[in-house]
Every structure is written in structure tokens, then in C-alpha cells.
Image 1 (spheres, rainbow, N blue to C red):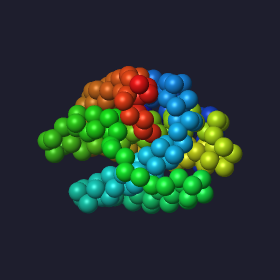
Image 2: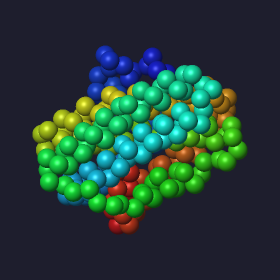
Image 3: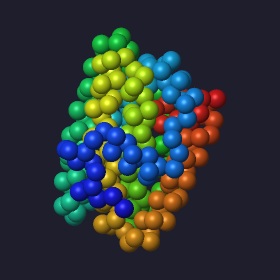
Length: 215
């Protein structure tokens, strides 16, 4: 399993980060999703902003709930700081591109992952951390799929996010291994990675940053 001393570091190449993420996930983003996203940048940006805000809120929730774990506190504090900066930056792109914020329903992806999280205390923490790793990995993989095709400034910005998203994935995964035994984490990773693959590859009625194939 990757650790925080692995490839996602200040000296890691973008290609190494993407290779790591692609090796972790079980399916690449379908080209039909990429094509749809490029034709609907307004929805993409609005939902991307929502995702950054929700990622920060998730980190704050973990900080509030698990004050007894200093390493979790530190890693989540960094994550929250970075996710809120990303939220601000996406809002700036929206303003620059004339995209107005509008309400969007939550994605099927997030809802389905959340519904599979266990409710007992120990199981819930491990699942939250495993899901956090997978969501961050999928976000990183989507940025990699999108950035070469986007307008220059937005494309460069999405490319710049690969390093932080890759580190967030590793932080979550490291914490999952610290709070669950190897067998439990492997079992939950298998469950949620299979679910991620199903959701990414199957038809989806709504286009979102983490949605499946546009129906």
C-alpha cells in the first residue's frame, strides 16, 4: 500500500502521480464523460466548487468527531485549508468565465458511497477514511483526464490540482491503515473500489463531477 513517503511528494512528477492513482482505481473515466464535461463547463465548474466545499466540510467533520487522534487532526487540518483554497479558486474561475452558481442535486456517486458506510463506531471511521481516499483518487484521475482538453488557464489549474489531490488520497489511505487492521481495510477497499467502478462505468441521468456515463 502507498504511504505518505511514497510518490506524492514535492519531487514527484505529474506522470508518477497519475500512474499511482490509475493503479489504485479499477476503471478510467469513460471518454463519453470527458466529452460531455467539455461541452458543459458551467455545470462542471459549479459541481467542482460544490465538491471542494464538501471535501473541506468532511475534513472538518472528522476533526470535530475525532479530536483524540493527533495525526488525523493534523492531516485533516491541512486538507481543509487546501480544499477551501481550491473552493475559492474555482469560484474565481466561475466569475472569470461568467458562470453563475446555481443549486445542483447531490451526485449519485456520493450518495451511493455514503449509503455503504458502516454505522458502528470503529467501522464507520475506517469506511469514512477509505471512501475519502477513493473520492480524492477519482477526483485526481478526472483532473488528469480533463486538463489537456481545457482552455489554457483552466487546464493549467486542473493540472496543478493533481499533486494536492494525490496527497489527499494518500493521507486518507494512510489513516485508514492506522485505524483498521490490514484485512479489514483490504476488504473495505475492495467493496468501495468495486462500487466506484460500477458508478463510473454505468449510465447516469445527471452530469456531475463524479457522475457515470451521461445517459
